[in-house]
Amino acid sequence: MEKKHTINFGAGPAKLPQSVLLQAQKELLDYNGSGVSVLEMSHRSSDFTKIMNTTENLLRELL
Image (tube, rainbow, N blue to C red; front, side, top):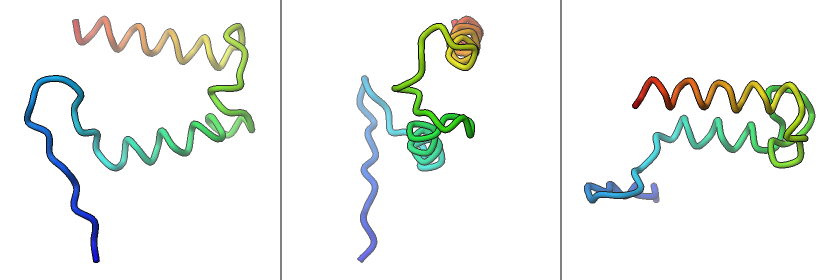
């Protein structure tokens, strides 16, 4: 039996598309083919700096 996906129309946390969840799951274990998880990498590494800069720029675009 196929599992139903819940739809949340209320304010607050939103339902994420399946593709976003799958990408997050993949990158959590091996970020961008680096062989290391995002959770394990140094906050001073170039990969993490790129993540932070990209995140900041995207957030600024939204605001």
